[in-house]
Image (tube, rainbow, N blue to C red; front, side, top):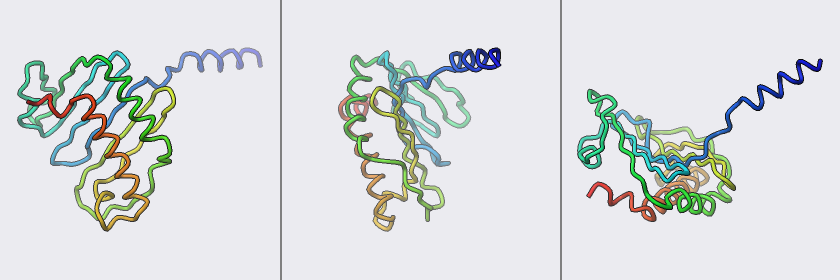
Amino acid sequence: MRRVGMLVLFLALATPALAEQIRFGDGGSIFGGATWTITPNDHVRYDAYQIDGGLSTRQGWVWDNPDVKQGHITFSIPGAFATAAAIAREGLADIGATPAFQTPCNDAGSLIMEVATEGVAYAGSLDHCAGQDGAPSEARAHYVALSGVQAEIVSALGLDRLAE
């Protein structure tokens, strides 16, 4: 019995904790998608597929798979993680779980938001059709809240200006 307890303790200690990060963007569409990942060391990584232009033309862009126009670029933005974490803490404080939503769309893609940091643990994905007028009110409100948090992070960090 003691050996089993020690083994369980060892395995629990050996299991890595979820890495602190903030990840958001758009995915799930055959027409393209992109996500931003911000880590505590203030690295901001942009991953995209089916991209042609914009950040893919910047020095430092790495093509992971040029055939499907998939690649990434990483920036160092001082204070990025603390800023994004503060926005996420405030914007996601009362959001609750992602509502179940059956999409009426064929390929709308998804709004993605994952936050793992002190005071916030949220992971969800919501079909872009949830943002349309015909979506159920709970799904639409959740979508609006998530997209608002994303827009605020993008604006605060100047991510929208990096392609200029």
